[in-house]
Length: 174
Image (cartoon, one colour):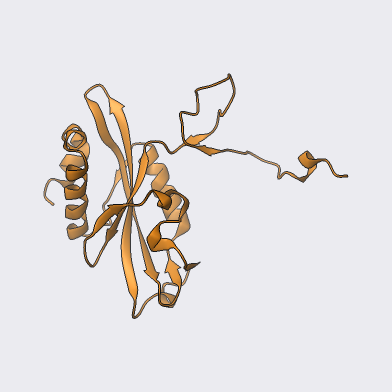
């Protein structure tokens, strides 16, 4: 009978957990990633409908279900295609109160009729990482989508918006 530890892959192992990774016993969950203060905000580029779908943290948002992800965008293009921005939004508490600290956007296209989706997975991972590191990266978004994001974040929580000076400056003309 093989030892279970022999079957494990070597290398660095980490967990994605809900709560603060530094609570609990010494050494427990050190090196873990906490997604407690991150939310995926989706913007439909055509309709400008903006919404949060927490299942997007695990690529299981409603817009992403029942599609096979492909690297060739042409497999997705055509009748039934829908384009989205997924905007990773990280909230932190600072001396002035809660702020939208990290905001980073990336593109994806879904065609439910063809059951295909296009996204650059490394881009989504990198943008999630940027948001978690309190970076703001929305430069590739079109003006209408930036405006929708601004309105959505203001309506979601005006106090957080008012405390978010850097993001307010970046989106002030939208």
